[in-house]
Length: 195
Image (cartoon, rainbow, N blue to C red):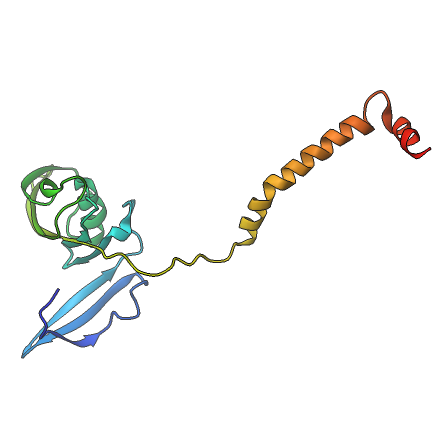
């Protein structure tokens, strides 16, 4: 995100990437310093394939996989509502001003790059707000290596053995019906095979 001469002065984020909260990282470039707030979110509401959203910078700039088209609803209600960039507790009308992001998708893929996304919300209270942001499409690299799966749990073992148990139970029931129940009964079977 930054040029090569930008360095981290203090890092309150590293080691907490999986713990929800707000963390501050101080960046320096020459004599200039800048505090960046990183917000770790536990869940992006009902956002499907949320792993495709890499991160959100400054509450509004979305970094997302270039093969994942975020819908307008997901952007406003799931992402910007969680970051606090947009207020969605009240009813509003949406007006598109600039949408370079959605119009550049071809066959489900958008070229890697940055796309301007500007819209206006007019709340029923009369308040109007214009939001201007950038959506960055990033091509995710395929990870080399082998996928390792954890050992099967007790439930997995039981579920894999369940069809065999069910089949064995069914065969046992048929044997019971044939030899132990009916007109001949157990006594006739016993006498036939053991006398």
